[in-house]
Length: 394
Image 1 (cartoon, rainbow, N blue to C red):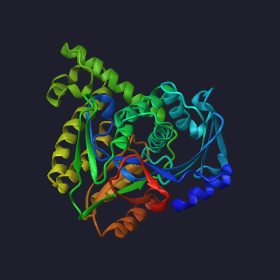
Image 2 (cartoon, one colour):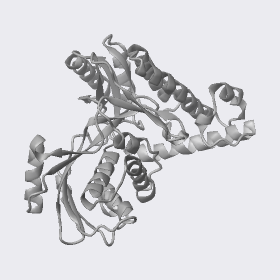
Image 3 (cartoon, rainbow, N blue to C red):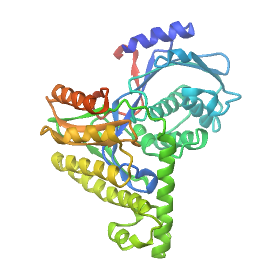
């Protein structure tokens, strides 16, 4: 969809031309460091140049009416700023309602908006379309109503929307990666201290490719919660065995974990803890390699990360495994791994430039032969966080 067409769609749906600003909020990929944000580890995400666009017009009443060109059959969703209900009332627009709710609790929003959005992130791809919408709305609210929100506040409010309004036990990685996104940069984020470093992607000979499994992800929420509960139990048993009172699994190292193996009530909890602690150490090494432009080494860590997520954390599945197994056979692929929560969603690969069409052909053929349908592939670049694109540049 051409960006300028979004203005026309808005006029058709809301019967008024929008303001001149075109707003954009990216999605994100996590290069390495999976399921570490809620375990106090270091993650390595980056915002990408796929995301969510919006145009707006101001209303005279206190209603927010939002339409998504991605879900035309859902029509326009109405949100009353004086009576924002439970998230279940708004369907996909619950992320929009949540943003107005959390900001409305700290500032008076004097009028409503008509909003039209369009996303280029594949639905349920694991590229954090939900956080993209949350941060987009928070950015718009801050800009339109003059509510001062810095990037850290936007990330924290985005997490509040997920945790408190939607009831999802997510960490802050997705919102942080989007809020702090910078062009050609990934973010080394310590989720325990919230300290971070921007790591610039210096190489021009390689590119990242997202491979969407196109697998339905009905179980993602319940399985995510289950893994989080298993980690909490594993931490409790480690603390009892070692007479310690650590807050996160990542406060332990592999040596202590192995010495504590007999203290776990099940091998499952040991495996969950092993992935988390091992992945944290691996991520720190991978960040060092990335910063030195040692991309072959970084790619090897990507493959190792996927192996741990498959064997120890058990969140990959046949679809993601087929993608990574196929990628291993191609000499122009430096690394590949699942990204996001797993159970479907997407994988990412780091490949040499000039091979995308070849990679796409092989991946589609091998994946369809094994799974029964094709994946979708996207070339992506590391991008900026929420921003305004002028109408003239659209």
